[in-house]
Amino acid sequence: MKTIQAISYPVHFQEESYQELSNLIEKNNYSIIFILVDENTFEHCYPKFISNLSTDKRIEIIEIESGEINKNLETCMGVWNAITELGGDRKSVLITLGGGVITDLGGFVASCFKRGIDFINIPTTLLSMVDASVGGKTGVDLGVLKNQIGLFANPEMVLVDNRYLATVAAREIKSGIAEIIKYGLTYDVKLFDEIKNNKDLKISDLIFRSVEIKNEVVLQDPKEKNLRKILNFGHTLGHAIESFYLESENKKNLTHGEAIAIGMVCECYMSSKIVGFPVEKLNEVKDVVISIYEKTTLLKEDFSAIMELLKHDKKNVNGQVNFVLLNDFEDFKIDCNVSEKLIIESMEFYNL
Ligand code: GLY
Image (cartoon, rainbow, N blue to C red):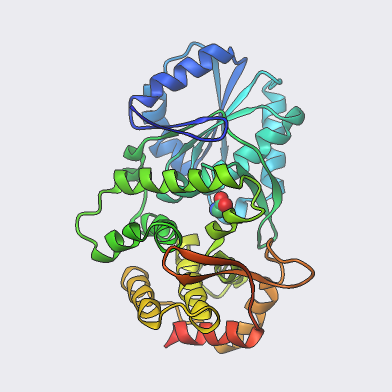
């Protein structure tokens, strides 16, 4: 069995991990096992999950509606009420079975319930396997503003079983690929090259390497004071674009990965103008992004609304938007101030 040791918990990979999960449940003698699912993971992932779990503890399923739009405090209230009505106590455990919404929201719910109960993440999408389920960030959105309410809290275990990816639509897989590109550009360009060359992607290797990188970064800077900011590459503008599409009723929503892929192209452009990121590499990143994701045209008339949303980014200090920029592949500069004019120019560059 492959395992990565995170700050206070193991990340186990593949089928053999279920034995570890059963052992953990036994060792901690949990009173009730709550399993948080959405309608999709209940139908497509829960049967596999439960057939692999061996325990005689009481199990209760709590289902929420899927989608980023439901990643809010109202949904949390529903889950807290359900746990309470079902008799949850401090010895209960919450297992999150789902994508980033489930693992982020579930971790937050568990960490606040009676001042904190244990939780265990079982990511079922590529995005949550390579990013959301690992690293201790939990939380929900405030309106369309992403992850504004939350806290750092670590799970007891993460179990990555990539057989769940068979239940996920191709568009969602591509969403997770964007996070792998991020690790490639900021930390290990081999990952970017593999995606660029796109020959028989070995998804389990890509997942393992991504978690390794994320863990290396988080171990050095768990609370995002410094190095961890690189994990936000592409997310500063990307989150604003994602929020904008989320709140625009007449536009189709972008997946998280689609939005941050645009954000990475734009932030590479800013990097080329401010810290000398090579132009040929900028074009390479743009070509790879355009080849994977359907092109979205960012309308000029939408720029000001996107700029407005950017003002709420969590990395901002004193009203100043802070970007992570690239001097080169694997070479970054954090806390860079970028003028509004250049941010707009970067969106125009993406549109070209
Ligand atoms: N998703 C970025 C981070 O966990 O820091």
